[in-house]
Image 1 (cartoon, rainbow, N blue to C red):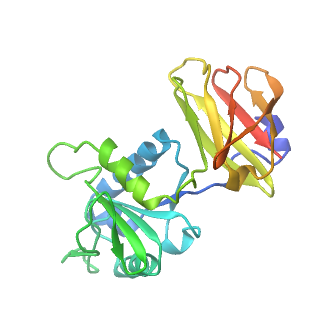
Image 2: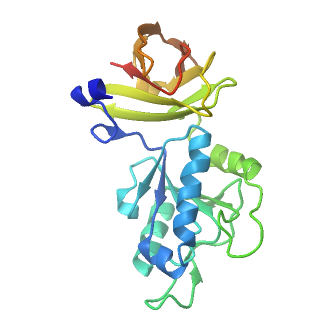
Image 3: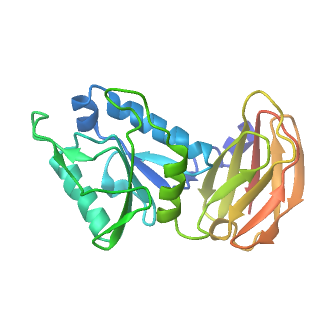
Length: 251
């Protein structure tokens, strides 16, 4: 960790890669008595489990170009937030909505649905695409299964071959991609207290560029150079076994 910080490559010093931006609205959180915030946390979690790069934003204007705007149980947005989200969608952006997004007045009353009916497979709204899923933190009743509809929604919204990174294999690994100029660092955490063995990492060409070798460093002291193999829209490599934390650096 000290070595990464000294090189300016630690999380917080570099810039995160964002495939999906989850909107956190203080207004929606207030009028939902905290349900919106819980849904935001759950959304980031379910996306991370699929190795998607998700960031939290406080305004639609903070969503990077090309990213998907995620509205998580956003049932009480401020009118300005609603207008910005509508402009984003109708202007050609992609929106993933958990539950029905709505705007309220200054007293948190008179909720008005922001969009029309949506389905997991996506519908066109203006020049953009909207995918709708069940709420993550429903106000009453059990949570609905989300794996299968989420997979359909992501297939409809993500650009073909546009994934930033992912890991295949039996090992449970979390992936976070950070950039510093042309340098790309893939931060890896082995979950469940077990060492990750035989895990295959892929990194999209839009991030890897022409890189064909990378440096792998682990918290266990490993420091090796490994080869990256071109494969379709990404490069891939079988990661050395590691426990805890590791970083693969490209460039």
